[in-house]
Length: 259
Image (tube, rainbow, N blue to C red; front, side):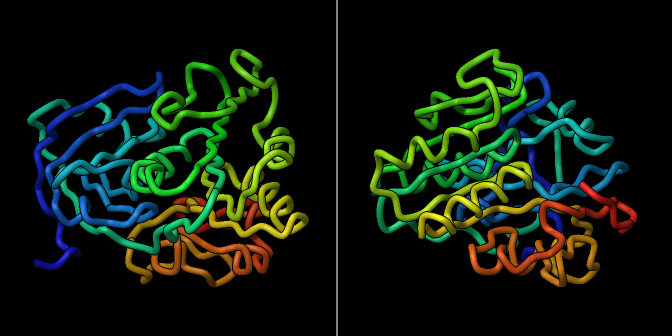
């Protein structure tokens, strides 16, 4: 069976991760076999379809961690066990498998795909996790990812400020080969600068408006790079070539706007 036709699944489990973030679990073998960093398109009848990163798997079940942002995410947040949702995918390019010590850098809702990365790799290589959010109540998966340092914009937990402000201190005492990151674009840009200055490698999961998920509509373009098809995970060299990343984004209508 192809992956481009929605599969109707029942919600098997739900969990509230923060006031604005919820996780749902679905029986869906195709996405349960995906690579960390890949995503699926979730479809709610009479509402819409949105791209959501896979945040975890267990046997043939997949988990999706969704931030409340608009009409479709609101509909998903209202789903309970036994309710139905459409799934297609998995799509995109995922993270590479780490071959040595690495840092996981997650900001806000971006921690979701990194959770699946941690599940898949933490037993094989040393992983140091840094997590940031706007406030303590919005921090995600801190205990599950055994976060070494957390930060909050308002100072309600951990470092008061941005998580990027502590990266270099953490790197001073560690033999690290790679940073894996997802979150706000300014955070990823700062991580890119740090990796370039220290000779480290980097992979980042990007987020853009996606309508088709298969590289046809162009809504997710960054300098011609199709986030849905060529990404969402991108390496350091490609990221360093983008002129729009961290500076421009596109609305649902395709309009280009400064970040």
